[in-house]
Image (cartoon, rainbow, N blue to C red; front, top):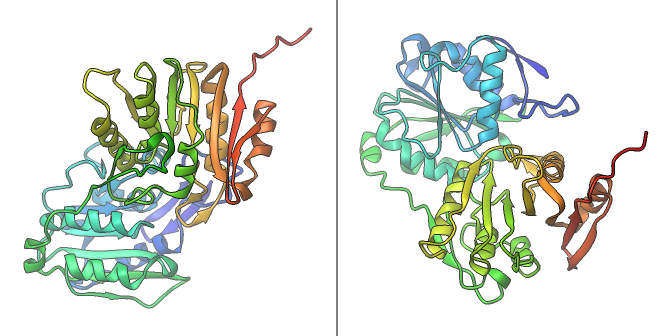
Length: 400
């Protein structure tokens, strides 16, 4: 846990789930820069009186730092991450603020935004597609007097980022850099707002014949999903390796993304009970759309869960977990998410249940899996990727 000191107060903030060993903070210089700017009270439209500004909307708040600091002004937060939402709730509670509707409004990227937005604060996401999708969805809710300020680290803000603001909302410029962070100032153009048009997302494609058990499937990707117009190399390799004769097993597509892996299992085994889970609301919406595009009505209904891996599933309730774990948390490279997924999987699996993982070879996950499960085998490999299989053994009672 670390303390963020801002012009609006000082707050103890953590990521979610909180881990005292995690050295990554719940905010960075981009969050600090934006909060300092707001306190200075000058923007593209002159002084910014937050107390009388009207509806403040915060988009893409990584772990709730912006929402917590600005809670006194009753902001709405829009996030694609269930973990970011949980972190925001925990940080608000820790600050004694809570999440009552009179204080803050917590929305997801799948929810309708506030009807009128007077101040729009955008934490630039890693995905340019997600930024475009959100700006197009938000444009009809802005007006000529809306104050629009974006923030991000210098390495996150590119010419293409600024072009999107300029194209969808209006004239755009950037601030000088401070601590490797930069602000984006955008002046809404009513004519542009009126002609912003609908988001081009989702995108749809068909898996080619080299897609293993996914060949011929229709895949639907909402904005922000990795590799939107084709199978990524890791998933393609995984689909050539996963077991599909599951004999009616309860199967989890963990970190499901667009859901092509779990859908491939369901199509191959209509009796399988498939659960799709991801921390991204956009991902789970994509998985549901992919499933519905390929599975005939009347077959077993799948489950679609947004949250922290398989933490919401009962212990010893799953036969097979298929996982392509991420190794980034926003811009930071970390194996923390993958290791948490592995530990959760061991708890959720029944004795004899299996965890299958596809990963970049250099991540060395076999070492962690052997330590956790007591076993791990390589079921497929190629120069960049490996597919690993770990089995949950029957636990022997301890001798007294």
